[in-house]
Length: 323
Image 1 (tube, one colour):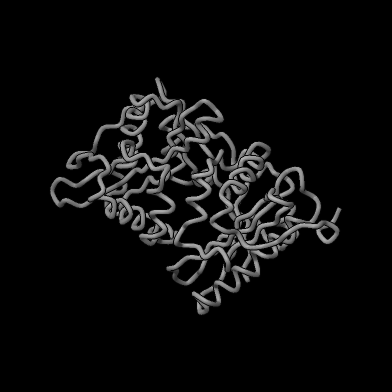
Image 2: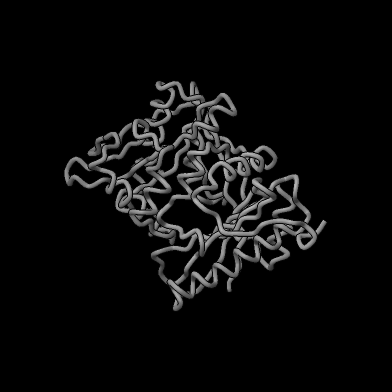
């Protein structure tokens, strides 16, 4: 059955779609194992994000009250030289191979161009989509749209327990737990580290949506501070999803941010933060820790996690196209 032959409703997402959105995302993850389980509250938090304007950046398809698929485009409020726009989306497994994915991806590409023209018309536009490398249908869809694989990332897990390494706090630094008063320092460390490798900066609004949201675990988030200068040298921030814990029976400490300021490279900052956080997660009865990292074998961060006892669980492929 084709898209045209079905009596479906196509419209932008709305904040009232949280239950339908969570149901769709959970059905997709049960098949594809790409992002974990969602509660209705998780979905509502994303839909209510002040960063995205749902009427201009999203499209969903419904059969009655059931959401069959969605497209959501995320532009960068701040960008330099290259504006990388994220085009996310997926289709319910029971309704694939009917043309829904093609229409939703086309919406993503067209919308990315429109948002780019509105916010960063003088920059180069690159549209990116990320999905599980093992999902053949998604890979075929991206390729058919002219997108090419440009990067791979690994989802790595740590079993805790005896696998936790010993890594001392570097001389001259002290460790501190997260506090509301130091939140901006966490974001600044993340942005400084990201800028060093050409990644986008996170605005204060983006940071609240992406990092310190309802899944944020402040008791498992730490920074290392230079005792002499008072500067934050590195930061590690953890999130954990209640729905994933309920679905798997395992409480996972996901390392959302692990960042070191360039001036403190090669001093064991990341290693110390990782070791300290793993041990604290063990003490707080988490079942494991996880992280997503660049899959390039030459990547320094990959080696850090492997030496810390993380092992690869699966991988994601990043497809992109210049428009």
